[in-house]
Length: 409
Image 1 (spheres, rainbow, N blue to C red):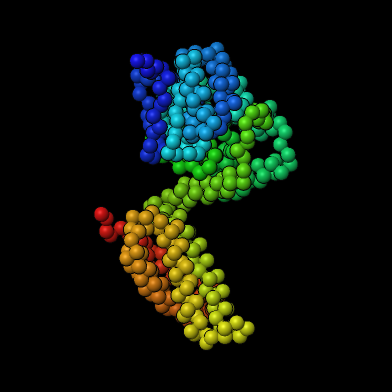
Image 2 (cartoon, one colour; image 1 turned 90 degrees about the vertical axis):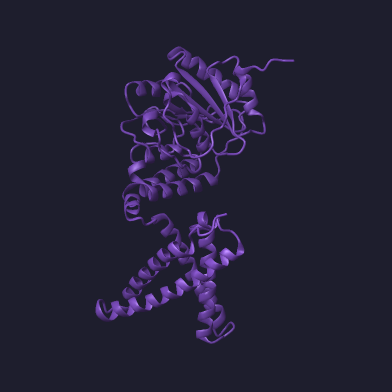
């Protein structure tokens, strides 16, 4: 009967919220470096060897390397696990029920023992020697050290024009949407950085896609930031994971951070008014306008069915309401709808939604006449004000009456 080698035991993957815990003084280390991997079998041994040689000379016995692999089909985690006996500072986590670079990094930080938390790609596109420069700035007291392609000594090795354009365009878009976050660093899309644990401890991070640095700056308590220039290298082994979905996720992440941080978020919290949910409700309502207009045209236009206008409007309005209900149930109030998925419960929500929208129409007409006759004799501005009032009414009453948990098994 063979003995189990405990030195090669995999780390258990944390579950639950992506919150960074306080570390135990008994297990204190200076530095924990997380290497998220997926399909990096050809690179993993090389990067572990290089990082170990660098850190053994700089901070021997004061660091750990944590590989977090998303159950790579090529067996990356198995190769990494086989290296643990040779590199005692190496730990490996195999995630099987969760995927994504950003969440992998946070899961690694959750089990880390270091005062300083870092991340580096596993494909050697981030030059490992830059670690020492960033670590030096952290030991001098900075809160966040970022490896930047846009500082002195930085750059990219062989990007084509399209990729350079997309990278700069994404950065410019970020500066417009979230200037207080992206304005603090020259390379906000960097995936190569270190942060002091105290800046993110007890903070629940909620990243989208690959750009975890945005989350750290946006939600963390980060003071001084230092940037170190580096040249982004092309990978020598394996396949690139850059694709169009990353840019979509990036925009989604920017918008979500914009809504959940800053003055708008503080106002939303103080007033008890969910701004993000309201904006989703408004976008759904806008889609309903197009549905209403399209159906009205198909039913009433002389070149189509040529039905009477009033009848056409009633049908078009009801179809638009049905459209709005489906989208609100699946998106705006999805968290509530998932708890009450039986058809009777959905029918009950739909009936309530219809009645509330009808009351909203009455409110719309009343406000329109009040504003036009007594405040501002401009029918179009008065109509816009009436629509705004009706939208807020529809959202708030639906929030309180239609989409709420009333029956829990």
